[in-house]
Length: 323
Image (cartoon, rainbow, N blue to C red; front, side, top):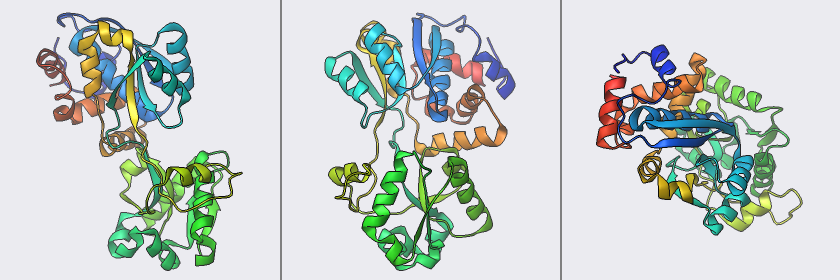
């Protein structure tokens, strides 16, 4: 089986049965496809590697965090859950404590990152703005505004609490609450493209931070107790604390680990940096591509990355397919 590495053709390959020449077929695998872009790409990349590299018969199950954990608890399926954000995740905590699941890789090797950002060109022109003290001392340089999250987002609470505790209003920085995630992203894009200042909340990996060069402002030390209070609108003991870096894991059921050590080893190797994932997400958005097409883009752009995830036999099969 030899296919030239064109995106349309390889995108179709993701829908084909397992590679005919794959040896020691791994059998049936059930994997989640979570309902956000980065997780879907992780699933599509992993599915391609399993089917075409190892001969697995993979069933992809659309899901989200809570339903996936409930399903594992009640039915023992899916076998693999990708992109589990482990902070404040009672389902994950309970299953891990019970020994029902095994935690594998930091599938986002940098973790889930969030905080306040400024354009990198602004940071290079004014290095003092890379710390919150520098921002507060120079509100005009950041446009006198914090671009904050829409109502209903958890970050709306934390950003507002941080701004109050740090004295943004007294320093001359307005907290502007956007009406939607789209307007928050658009405000950043417009500012960067026009060379205007921008200061606001965002997170990664995301397509917009894959497209635009932004610098995260140093918000000080992280304190769990303070952050927990900042997250609760009813808590009065708010304070200044950085945002946590959230571990983002792949997990498998304990049964699957015991019965499928080869695929467990593969999934323990599947790791994306935020820069890699952000770049793929930006490409996907710019090209109106599907998740499977974005997966193929990653596979054809980063062969040196996924080549280190698979064993020698799978690498040979996949390299022949992707050349």
